[in-house]
Length: 530
Image 1: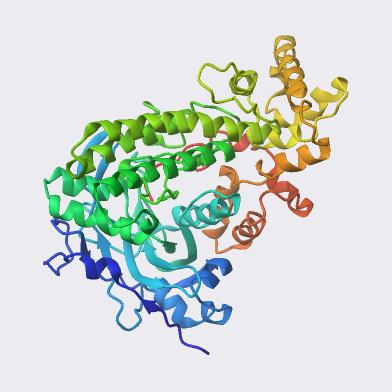
Image 2: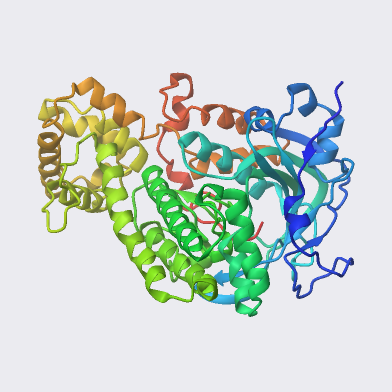
């Protein structure tokens, strides 16, 4: 059996000065990171892995099945010259500056150079305390780890930028959690996810040194990120800093547009949960839209204010970018170009959102769609669709798939779409009037194209998934996994690898949310407790 070997890079730890204190206890840290070892686990068990991620980092199937893999990616053993570390950063949480946060339960196992995919960081989530754990223990429970593993891989196959998940392991240890902070704490099985990305640096990584007036570390961090992940922009300079900020804005914009396309709600878009390379990061109390609702948030902590609800994710992204602009202002020393980039975000988002909606509906935008002052039948169609979908409980994912093969005969429209509706009693005469009016306008715009209807339908199904990680399916997989039954977990992993394909053998995973799941914990609302 071939031993696991990586080409270690250690670029981050070699670039920045480490925390001088070796002991692992909660404290304020003035450096960019602290060396810290994962906590050894009692009896690790590998319960899931991603073959594709393993291949991308240079591991064979045989190596993934080896005891060495299990020990390494559960935190029980290290390879030669590995120096695990946790990063120091700050952030705004729910709109309020929280000061130092950092990797409270994430430990960067190693930075490696992969055979064909450049540099990657291997990070263990739930592998024990770090100096940034504050009052927490640094561990993770199985339920949140299943959600992280499945959603990371589901998002990738949906075509949404994301951190990846290599492996999911039980630790053999129990972790005590109060799931809804209501005084009902209980012991749950502990788990560790190994996640993989080119960078785990966040907006908050720049905010903390800026807040501390540490211009030296701030400059070093920005230069590092540009050289590491934005090298195409050139050597760091004021002009390149601005080009970099504009690209971060653009990547973030595209990310949120993709979230809206597939119906994903991040749930906790704090600035410390925003990736500087534009990936979805930190799968906590996220959720998938079942019935279309712009005001829905999956996060119990956000239930009253709904700051991070589905329909305002772009606004929050812009607000977070504003905080990043404030952080890097000492390097730019000019407000105007930063304001211009932030203003462009709004314009870019509207354009990308309209382009995305046109693709979802299989219609073509006119060449002058984004010309200032241009009237847009298409944009009004998109806005009216959102209002229509919110009139009664309508399953977003099923609606778009059914729309792709809408019959020409109007008399079949309602029966064709009925499977989208959660409560047929809501289909009143007034609703039918609004629905048919919209469908008629839509059909006219769609048929303006010279494309064949079958080609339009095919294109729509390439951007509108049939399968997403529905909240109730994830919860069912969790409940079975807690009984040591991983069948559904592995089935979901497999079907979500091809989310746009029909896969009739898995039709049950494309069904709308069952009634029992509407208000069930884990299916409708989640907390940050994990």
